Image 1 (tube, helix red, strand yellow):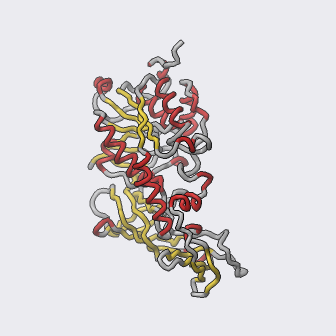
Image 2: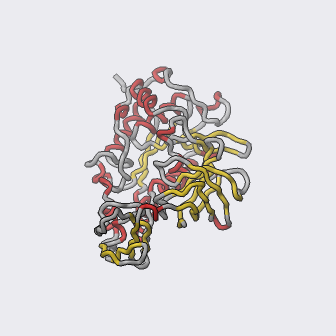
Image 3: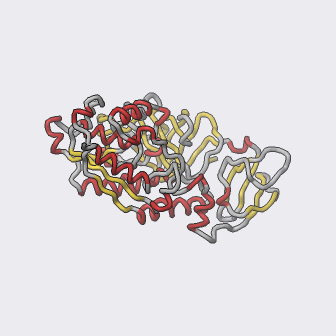
Length: 384
């Protein structure tokens, strides 16, 4: 007996419209789905199939699958490739695995290491989205004759006055807009996100309903190439000569001790500083050129004026003193701020209330002051 689902078996799933024209033409419209092997992208593929499009699944091998298959909580390798292939077979759709390992190392892993060694706190998931996934994979999808690329991200897009707009999803607990701020307008025109109006529980229920074995599969936890959160271990493996020692200084200039490499520290860090003064100390800044880690009391972390570069603007017109809501970390909520866009992709954000732990290398994402629309964002260059 075949394990392939019949079309009628999908009838209890929502019938989505990807905004690609008349429903009568869907069978002739190829849609590529980026399938990671997790439940989200698997249900996204099922929704595309249910809607009647010519669905094609693609999974990216981003790093050594031999290592990844031995540990849990990873993605884009090993067991996940097997799971994606099995889902595609059950949905009776073509599935391809593309070896993007060298592209991933050059565009994401090397940049991650360089950023850390410069004293920044990078977010490789954003770089992965903007390069390997939404640049390289999108190009591949076009070459396959696709009219859209679908992913399992929790984000919403709507067609507005000036084209497709990005909005936060229904399930704000799963909102991934922080990781997608660098998506360009051209990419938005081609991307589709069918999970926008679904919660995680609903997605798992639909996966179970149609018999997908990934229905109860745990979400990825770690950065895929950083097992157990051991950033220093990965950096040392890729840059064996990176552990140059330096000074730990108080914000008042006093020398407090020595460290074994700036890669062991991030702004806002309290534990594991290697110095003790009786009062709690936090990493306030990192000067990679001088190999200095600057520490101080908690109130020294507060910053209100943030300088950004590589800004991606998805709003209408140019912002000059525009009221927005700004989000400076993935786990934080957007807070009121004033945004001024400058030349050459730079911008300045002034927070209505200063926040702690503003770290160079992190992202600052902008939202409309009175709606859930994502207006873009940029990379934090510095803060005062």
